[in-house]
Image (cartoon, rainbow, N blue to C red; front, side, top):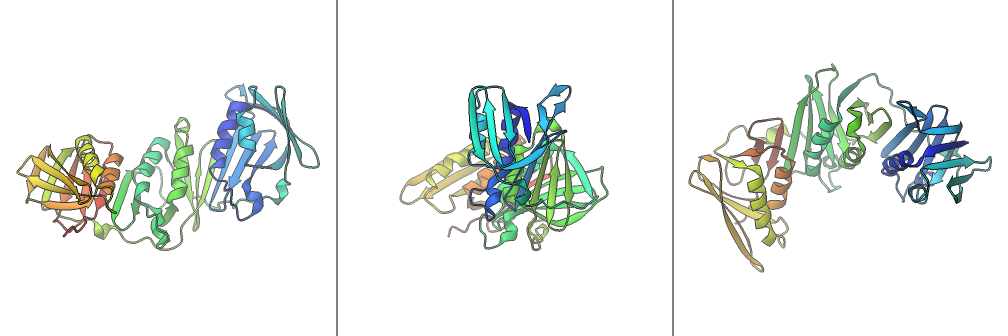
Length: 378
């Protein structure tokens, strides 16, 4: 096996694939990276059993030669050392050669590294998704939907199903839902070019975080395929395979109140900054609790009190307050996370009482919904 490759392209592919490789791999060979050369280009593979990532560098792309002098073959290299060797290669190209005893020579300019490789035949075969059912969506939209929901997954392994995001595709509407049972984040969008439907598909939050980091917006669309226990996200040069979580995702629609007794319309940035300041003195508390009190028709008061530290109070003029007067306490962290996920200048917050969940929506758009349970402070 032999090839000469552009260093920058190799660095990018290695960085992507490394996101699937664990230093504490259950199967020792999975702590390595599989490198495969064919006449079409170079494929790098990493896997930790939960996530598998393949990155392909084509030999030629848009008239540019990326890889040359290719002699097909495959090898597995220790992922602990290989990325740094590539990153610190002194020249723009890297020459890679493997002898029949799995000895690997990596050279660039006057630098030469000799590594012990492993037989690629011992690397587990990645499961192949057998499905004709797939749909496509724009990569920027995919990244947005992840960003607006994944922060609300549970970090507690006591209910593993809540550590994932529930993907549902029904009637051409795709929704992502995440909840840790104290808050909920939901994002919906239309997918017109498909007739497939699914509802109990729960993707680990960790998988979606890693996917979001490596999706390249220059590639425009991502193709998504789902089977009973796996999901594949595929772009022109990347395949990202994740296992799905077992179990039934809870029915969350009944958590969302259908009526509101108090509605506040407010500038997102103003409310975010006010709650952020109030939370400075709430950090000692486990929930970082702040209290919101309505004052007439255009003013709210945000306060926080920590007996050992002190208290803070700030009045904020809002666009409008409709309905009953209200005093409510909630986690400042949850509210900050929710407001940061909104990409709109104004939001409405619908309250149904001091001890009922409240809903945050963009003023002009109902495709994003954040729900937070209040905190009892008396």
